[in-house]
Length: 150
Image 1: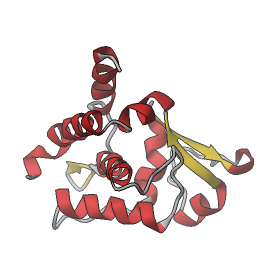
Image 2: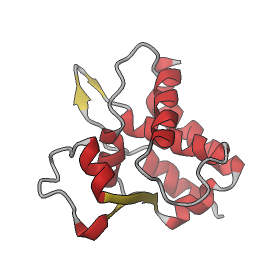
Image 3: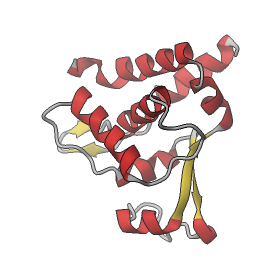
Image 4: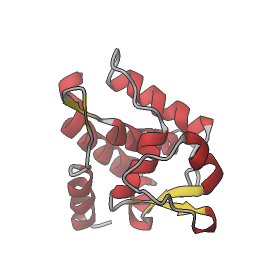
């Protein structure tokens, strides 16, 4: 791993597109990324395939409640789907069934039925397998989006 690669991903993660709701930016996508890092740390995510399921949703909800206690949590389907806008994250659709209106958030039911899985780009996934690098990237996201809440 080079310093250039680490710097690149720190920059990418500090540029996450966030929605605006009720007078503030939503941290759903940064919190979802932290849930992924936690899943890797706990040995719950062993391969670069994130299924739309209860175990990943539980990690996401844990992140939300830990970093933004008392705030209304964005439903899991929103960051799962909208993270696809980020350059480090992709969704593999079953039968090419990408929603016709990508500006509209598909329902949780639609995602369960039409998503094979989501995944990170291979280089980021590889970097996150190293606990020290994972912690650096995690702290970078916390500092950028959540430090004011701590």
